[in-house]
Length: 113
Image 1 (cartoon, rainbow, N blue to C red):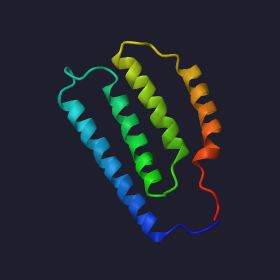
Image 2: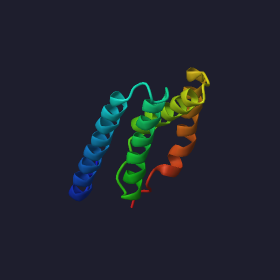
Image 3: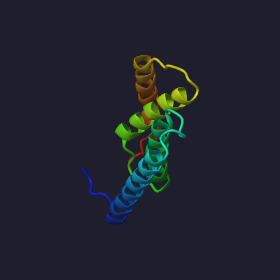
Image 4: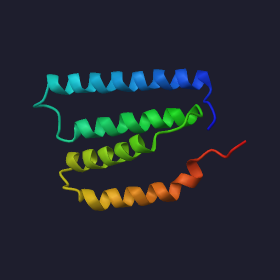
């Protein structure tokens, strides 16, 4: 196991702090106006934040979290479905996302130097 670059570790902590801050701001904003926010907005926001965090990690060469990518995709799908009034079959979606992660994993892994 190799040690990760201290700069990347520090940047990753900062990115995680920003993501948590965005999450808390989103929750506070949604709680301030619960009647005016469409159902599914919270899950849509969570999915965007999680996937956005991992997208920035990828751009900076920081190891992405497969777990938060998975949760982000699930939250995004359920949130979009709720916004459009579609009751999505969660279990089949989870199986499809799992399959996609297996297919895409070799392409997303960095090659050893």
